[in-house]
Amino acid sequence: MVETRDLSLPSRFQGRRGKAALILTIVWSGTIALHLASWGSIFVLGLTTILGIHALVIVFAKPRHYQKEMQGELPFVSVMVAAKNEEAVIGKLVKNLCNLEYPKGQYEVWIIDDHSTDNTPQVLAELAQEYENLKVLRRSAQAVGGKSGALNQVLPLTKGELIAVFDADAQVSSDLLLQVVPLFQRDKVGAVQVRKAIANAKENFWTKGQMAEMALDTWFQQQRTAIGGIGELRGNGQFVRRTALEGFGGWNEETITDDLDMTFRLHLDNWDIECVFYPAVQEEGVTSAVALWHQRNRWAEGGYQRFLDYWDLILKNRMGTRKTWDMLMFMFTMYILPTAAIPDLFMSVSRHRLPILGPVTGLSITMSVVGMYAGLRRIRQEQKFNVYTPFVLLLQTVRGTLYMLHWLVVMSSTTARMSVRPKRLKWVKTVHTGSSH
Image (cartoon, rainbow, N blue to C red; front, side, top):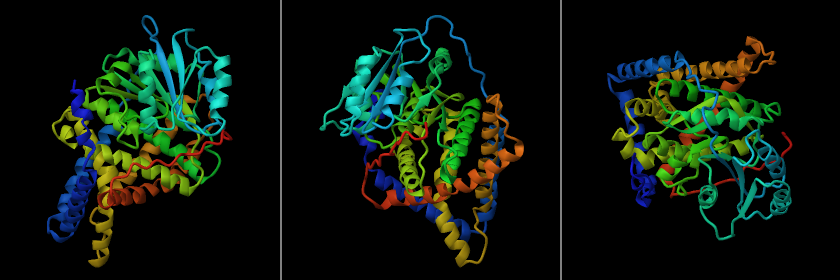
């Protein structure tokens, strides 16, 4: 195992702005050089070939088969939710989580009230009288660390071998624990992420797009883990082995996306993350372009932070060759390529030629379309009463692909902003209304 100090030293999370500026300079100057060099097009075609081979391996991988029955006694599970001003949804969440199908006395539910100023404390006080497996911790106004700080504060008070984390707007099936817990029978599994389903998917273009996006995301995670690549945590609906958590000191309070940061910590500590389509966790999708912009910028910034924070351990191949290679392919497609799009477009206009990175961009979009269709189809196959036809799935894929184009703007602007603006750890709360459940 990687020593905790390797992953938790405060100095590791310093100098992000300088690192981001260096990467931005390399990417932009490198893209311009490709336009000016005689071998630029050949280099891009070679890169496209390498990425294409990796993409084909992912597409044709067979998902892992999971052991669905538990051998031996069921482990104790601690379910944790950090909540702040969630009066609209907290009551339904608690009733859902406190009535799961799991042996009595074998799981507990902890709600961390992060100094809410609405009626959340009153609602929780009433529910605590009704459910004996519900425990509530109220944080003071001086408490720091955000969601990560809240989870770290309550962790020593829990006793579960497995820790489950949900958002305040979550809703799950009653047999969730019985389906997820058996996946931890493989000793190397440090965490499991269930698919995030959008409860209000039918509301508008943005929520329909998020539904397709989550199908794409889960499909990619399953296919990547099937080839020995990286599975990732998504915050809501994540299960983590306690020994893994304690091995690297819990949640990182120096990041704005604790789930994405923990993904790297787990893999650097030689744990695997499994991702499954079923069971799923229902959550509210954001309903406007402005809310989506704030949310996705936070995700992009947090996702980029982890590459800047752990770059040295990644280059030392601490994850292992397969995971490192898969992670680098993912980083290029998700972060480097959108960043390079700006100078590529500028040079193509000034030199009256097509964007030199066109082949790679085309491959990336093609993979998104294939993965989205496959993910939506996989959901349909596992929903016995779903009557969606291939034509309907194709329409959902086209709409979802148009929606996904927002990531090009988000990624390119985020990587550029992080290079010139001072360090910021800004979190914009997603408002939950409860109207989707």
